[in-house]
Length: 124
Image (cartoon, rainbow, N blue to C red; front, side, top):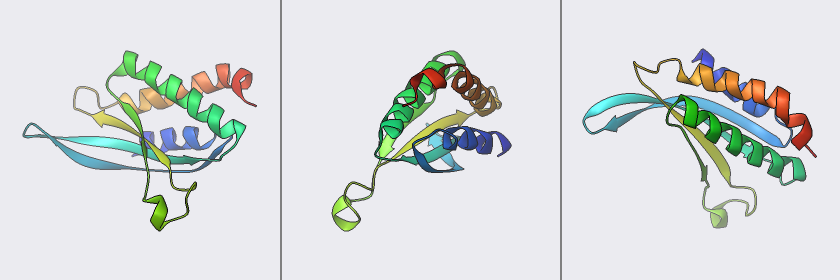
């Protein structure tokens, strides 16, 4: 859990990120079980929120190419039952396998380094 918490902390440190939470879940893929680590976060409706989403999407997508499968996708509660315009969140999932048990830590390190190097030129 240490690495997924580190990944959450890096994501939460971006300007424009309102909140972020993390956890793991079990996935059944073709009869075999595997753990999925996830970080869920919500963005402000602001220039930095939009730029954070753009940067995180690029960085996590780029890292996934080098370090294995991972996915970033939107989720939302029904706006009609909640507060429209305030429901959408994003989830980043990383499969954890015996072969790639350190994948989350590698992605967290990559994101932290890329943020330090490239984020200052991207923020509003």
